[in-house]
Image (cartoon, rainbow, N blue to C red; front, side, top):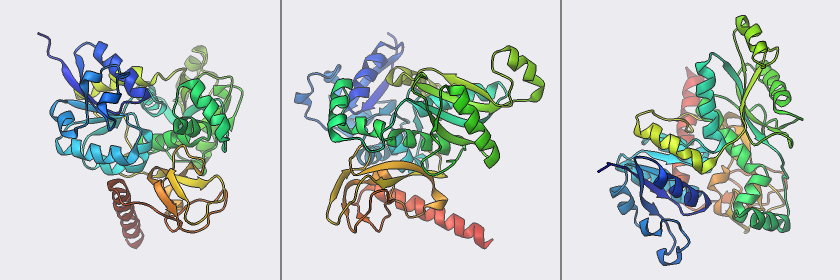
Length: 390
């Protein structure tokens, strides 16, 4: 009888439903358990509802690798720490968690983001690009549309039309999601944010935007993680890179242009369908594809979409009508509140529209996610102090 690797899954949402179907079809793999906080009796629509469990211990006992895609930073962090105590590798489809607590988790055990969402696809493209001798300057995400402060009415309409929950639809539209994705890419691949909120270059096509950003990165003297706004371009990711001048004629012949910057891109990212590639990578000992690193440089600050007054409760940061997220270099914004921590946060003092929230502005409920962020922040400040004193 074929011995199959046991794949556990955390979460029963949109991504999870498609993912378990694909894992179950894949040779040598099987879905062992799916962890949910929902009442299992109310999950009749879930594809493999006979595998559902409310027990983290049961999930751990029956899994060789676990894929986390619950979309909840606070709960996800607590659960992953339990899993790491059992020395089980964790694959995430959760850039929100990665940029908030991923660095702390990376110091505790094996964690990697999956291929499929843009960050994992960029990491995979980078491996290919490096193997051909290119030197990346820009790790880019292709966006077609943004509205930094969409109305609730519009978001309810589009969420229903696209089959997404309201929070996801808002985070895609107001730019928070692309900022989170590119912060993860920056931290995992050794890049930085060019400016707070990223460049977000508007352009007709990928190559034009990539060249503009490559020139900017060249001037800065380090690679950047960013996005372009190009409604006519396909959804996907790109890398703008340099190469040895001795290959210039070859690269022109191969339709990459005259240089000095060359754009290589993938015209799709297939989310749950590509996760199996990362599962096989981990089972085969291939190591981390991408995580937030143990020494991140970029975080996601929270920007007020409107005036916030004392006593207001921000139920969630990502995908809310109170705040949106922007990528910032952490050394320039030491007291910012990461948007991933804004769950049931109470506003302490008035915050004006467009203002960046700090820890002085809100009270955040205690959680492992909050304490892990504070621990990592203290370590970063201590390292910075030690370097300045030496």
